[in-house]
Image 1 (cartoon, rainbow, N blue to C red):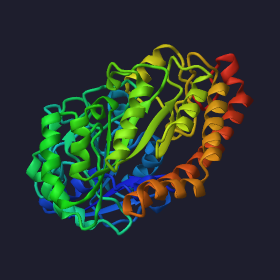
Image 2 (cartoon, helix red, strand yellow):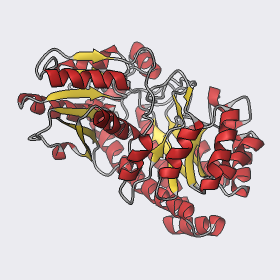
Image 3 (cartoon, one colour):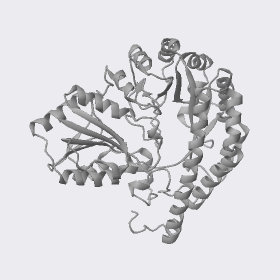
Image 4 (cartoon, rainbow, N blue to C red):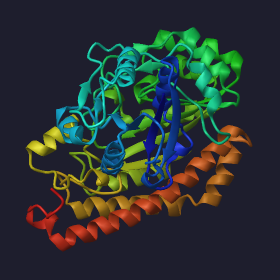
Length: 452
């Protein structure tokens, strides 16, 4: 029997390059259960509604939920069993919303549960059109497949293999929508090493929500990976990188690209540790460069406590720093996160069209600035950064600082993508701003028809 698995996207998306790791997990699970899986990363218009598959599964992210519901309805009309799962289903509200559109909803899932579901489809116990079955891995039994390394050979030439060294994230930031957030588990070092060794190319992305939280594990892992001479990108916290021994171990193990979740310069987040944020970040950047590693800073605009002058702080810090790259997002209160529940209680969410929960729209009222302040400040910030570091200037600086190599060329490519993405966000946000102005929503506090 056959099963199609989909990850939907809208337009050009980074998942074209950083392959979603859960797709390969589902592929391996289905194959081990005797099914024939097919994986697709595509837009809504490319979903095969006339597929011969017995089951069609979608990995649901909030911004693509409406498109997936439409596709799921059409597939069920054709008698297909539809599975929905993924980070959109963190709580009960989105599960209830999705129930009319599918036959199985998985807020979280382990291999045994997947096997049982496929067996019930095979036996006819689960059929298209029945009331939706809700499944959750409440005991935390999810683990990556032991033979997961085999899936890494399926990448196309431009796709960066993604590997996880841990599960969960203990920080529980209320704005974060990390998949499997919560209890923290470390994977077996030998298993991770074998997966890294199986990657045919040099470049690898470790997909941990926060890499390197366990110091002794990370030191041992880096020793195990060093002989493989890979070039690894990781996302981690400032508190981890302030440890000189750990930082040196990352460089020794092959880490060449550090992504640091700074988020904000105005607020003290738990993951920053008890330090002077700007000074400590500057020290980490200098040490990382000395060890041959590049650093990208990730920021989020619009967090509660930020004011209109927060954008200038980010700009001035970036201009005065030696960060190799910067990514700036805009707050999106994903459903059933702590942030969403708090803003909902306070009556500050005015747009519940999930397709707008994409970082390209403002869907809530900030607490210390207006919606216009947030949109104008964000666009000006990204525009000023584009003007300060032109693409040509960044190419010269990157090659001068890090030489001609795969890691520096990847950073150049990332910076080019960020520039194009910032222009796309500007177009969407200006359209969003005009729509809100027409409804006077951000001035009157009233709900606009079709938004709430």
